[in-house]
Each structure stands twice: as C-alpha cells, then as structure tokens.
Length: 143
Image (cartoon, rainbow, N blue to C red; front, side):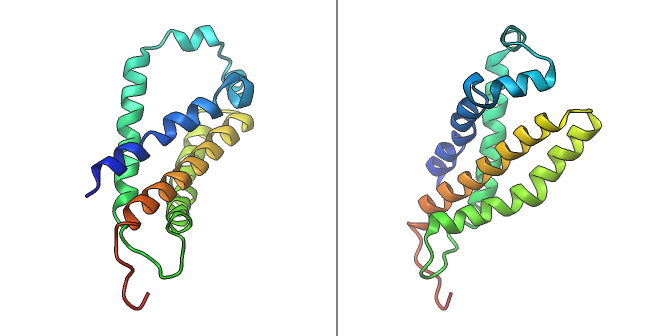
C-alpha cells in the first residue's frame, strides 16, 4: 500500500476545487445557482468542511489505488489510470450527484458545474495514483 500516493492524490480535489470554484472560473455561477454570496460561504466552519472533504478525498484515493498496480503492457499508466478514474466517476459519482441534485431542486447550472468537477477530478485522481503506484509495479505477464 502506497500511503504517500494516496495522500498526495487526495489533494487533487482541494487543488482543482480551488481553481474550479474560484469566482473567476465557475465560482460565481455556482454561488448564483445556489443563491449564495461570498459572505455566506465565509460563515461556515471551514476547518470542519475542509477536514471532512479531505477525508472523503482520501477514501476516493484509497478506492482508486486498489488496482493501481495492475498494468497494461505498452500503455501509459497515467492514461490507464484516467480510464479507471473516469469509469467510477461517470457511472457512480455523477449519477448519484445528479440524482441528489434533482431532488434538492438544484438548477441545471449547478448540476453541470458540480458533475463536471467530479468527473474531471476523479479522472485525474485515477491518472495520478496509477502513474505513481503503477510505475513501481512490474508489467503483468501476457497483458
């Protein structure tokens, strides 16, 4: 188990989230979609929010690392990992997020911003963790 790889990969949602939800990218549209202002966001317990978000990112990273030592001969491990990140993001995370968002009556802008964020984030997490752990694994015999 490569705990450093899991920990570093868990930083990806934080880093990408800072960029994605920044007011100069999608942050203003996201806040407007929820009827929030920057002052509203400052009112939360940021230590708890970021702490629990990081724990959730660790869980995702740990799950993605489960098969990261599996290699495909002749395939770039980053690309291979992106594939293995994209599949659970597209077929588990995004459907759950969209379903919850529909029941919460979130508007289409909010749903698209959040769904694309998680699709891209988990895909990148898969790429990084597979490149890191897969580079240490020997290629599988016979593919």
